[in-house]
Figure 1: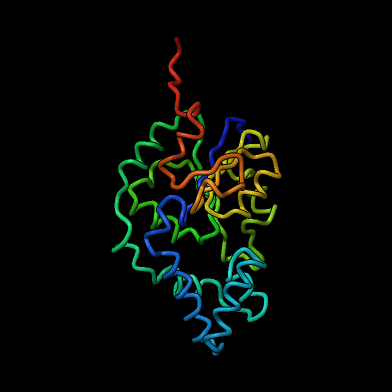
Figure 2 (figure 1 turned 120 degrees about the vertical axis):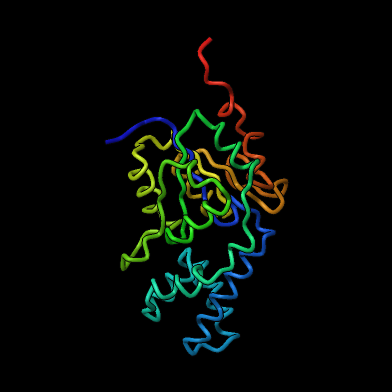
Length: 224
């Protein structure tokens, strides 16, 4: 069944919470530590982490392809080991922003495995604000992830929308935003410097600024 009402897709990591939390740095270090524990020299591990992310969208994809790692063990050691409880706190402003976004359906679209994303949403106090989630399913041998076109097609299918022009995306990854835009989605780039970013239709410095670039989505839906 398809429901062609607009769907707003929200990336999770470094998007629903700010990059300044330090989670990104910790995540990268845990990936490197995981590689070192595999026997990869530290210098090479740093290089491969960055290269695999660039080539495959996720370091895990490169490790699966070249080292046949156990994705669920990787998730447990990397994302599962992050001290999120000590970092992420309920975000009342974010919750209010989502709660007043009534003109679209709301859907999480993440490259994380679902336990990590669910943990983030719960700690931010917004786990009840989304209709569903499209995630990188680490249980599948060749799971889809952004920026692969198949990941966007999967998200549309799971959210029940067929018209790309009815899809909105907010994401901190420039390439993820660029691919969505090329597919006909309306896109917002959460950028370190919005004035310098030329990715997507709109650029913002943080998720709380979303209504400033798409104010019509937050206008009252009451009948006259």
